[in-house]
Amino acid sequence: MSNVKSTSGEKTFIKSLFQFSIGQWIAAIISFITTPIITWLIIPDEFGKAAMFTLAFNLILNIVLLGADQSFVRFFYERSESKRSSLLWESLLPSLSIGILTFIIIGIFWQELSILLFGDSTHFIPILLLDITVFVALIERYALLLVRMKQRGKVYSIIRIINSLANAVFTILYALLIDKTFYAVIIGLFFSHVCSAIVAIIYEKEIWRTKTHIDKNNIKAIIKYGLPFVPTFIVIWIFQSIDRIAIRNYCDFAEVGIYTAAFKIVAVMSLIQSSFTTYWVPVSYESYEKNPNNTGIFEKVSLFVSAIMFISGIVIVIFKDLIFLMLESSYRSAAGLTSFLLLMPILETVSYVTTVGINFKKKTYLYIIRATIAAIINVVGNIFLVPKYGAEGAALSTAISYVVYFFMGTYFSQKLYPVNYHLGKFYISTFVFLVVSFINTFIPIIYLQVISAVVGFVIICYLYKDQIFYLLNITKEGVDTLRKTK
Image 1 (cartoon, one colour):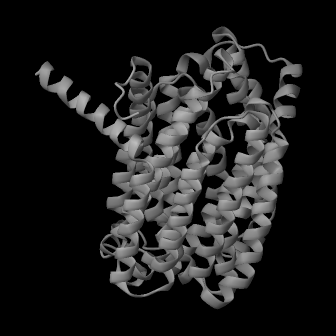
Image 2 (cartoon, rainbow, N blue to C red):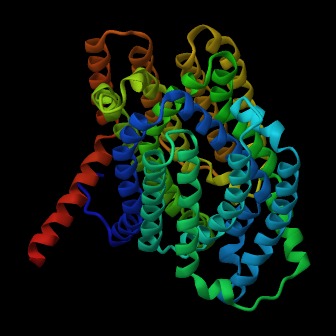
């Protein structure tokens, strides 16, 4: 592959992916710069409370959405452009209805929720903000989906940059000018959603204000397709959140805060994941609708994404201790946790390619099976490991369950829509990453940690050498083109 010149189609794909990705990369840089600042302003105990707020927010939002956002994505290219405004409101109305009901329930039981999340019943304002933020995020979700599905990469990147900037600015300003508590993180989250929702709606204002005809039968079809995603999302939430819940139960808010700090660094990789999936979802559906028999794009993309994610992850592992020197000293113990946690964005990103068959064949119930089994493994792992090893045990349990999560999703998809994903390379790389992560988490000898990570880097680069040379070739062609233009 490295000796073959890139085709115009592949160049177009990479160019479009870059347009979607650049905003996430800049957002990742912003997050990378501001995370150390925030750790110097907010102690781990308060950071842990903010993490519990975020967990509750994600759970409630996914329930309120009713899976209708997934229906919107699935049916977008089946509707003509003139009928997409109707699809928008037919998808949004059920979510808004459940959102109002949820708002009332939270309002009634706010004290109980405050005790559950923050340990006492005095935090009315954060619970109120939780309610309001869910509503704002609901609107934002559809506004961003419109931009994504219309494949407006530059616009999407601008919105992601605005979101990240707003989050950082409002969090830091609140901590500096008002109070250095978890309220600062909540305020930052709220205004980040507000800003990105407003900008996204402005960019797609025509479709939002177009007169529409709401068809009840279409709403039923949307709910029918999307509703199975709700239990899946709940199980996935348990799967992805049980680590922090277990740490909160067996340890304290400070340990949750340290664990969350590790997630903040891992979030750099998660932003890369988000930039890819944002572009990939509409492209995969469009490719399948045009030619279901053309599996070549899925094969190639899986290889390139695997190479980029594994190499990016192992580089972060090599330099993790230097990265965490920028954080306040009470957070630096989180450095070892990042190794295992990096497997989350790596495996999840690649699974967006390797599980396309489940979506194409509309067998979404398989997601429930996959998520349930992975969640059970993670719950059991956390129950046994967290009491003894604390946050390190939670990270190990999470990594193992994510491997199972990836394997099952890919297995189901392959049965429905066979594609050669070159899984041999992938599973060898996963095993190498697990070994490196174990050494970097449980063996406190820095030179052994670095050597293991460097060896892992060499092995992964060898496995994906064709993809690396290919990407370097495209980069060289791009640089040469710019020189000729000048």
